[in-house]
Image 1: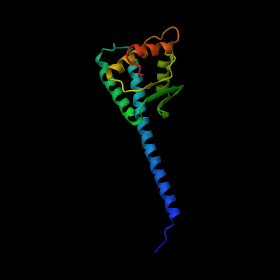
Image 2 (image 1 turned 60 degrees about the vertical axis):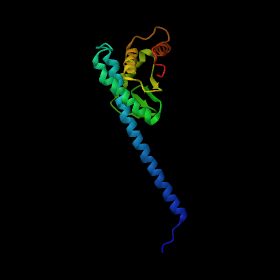
Image 3 (image 1 turned 30 degrees about the vertical axis):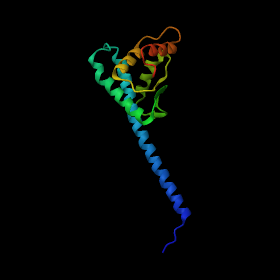
Image 4 (image 1 turned 180 degrees about the horizontal axis):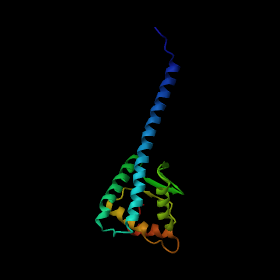
Length: 162
């Protein structure tokens, strides 16, 4: 009968557990990247949609519902959802979202007038709140302290969780 070396067995088990954890982290990262790409594209699309439609237009129904649903998925996995734009990159909860350079630049550009480089969503917005958020981001920035002005407007509109 072969003698089993306890130390070698424990080391092999430890490596197997580490590999399993890395696999889980990789799967989670892929889920977040895919959801993050959808969140960013939907957010940008909603903001741009305000240029051609009123917030009450039915064109906002589907993308607002989808944005809320995707944010809900990420929120369930991670809690608060943090979107950060840095030049031509976008991060969702510290995971870089990989897609064409243009998408990240466009989102940065629509947030820049408000001197905002991202946002945190501490709860999942309803489709109605999502519409309101898109409208506020597409609006003109306040003349003095645009970021602070936007935060104040969000709070006044009941969006203080953003």
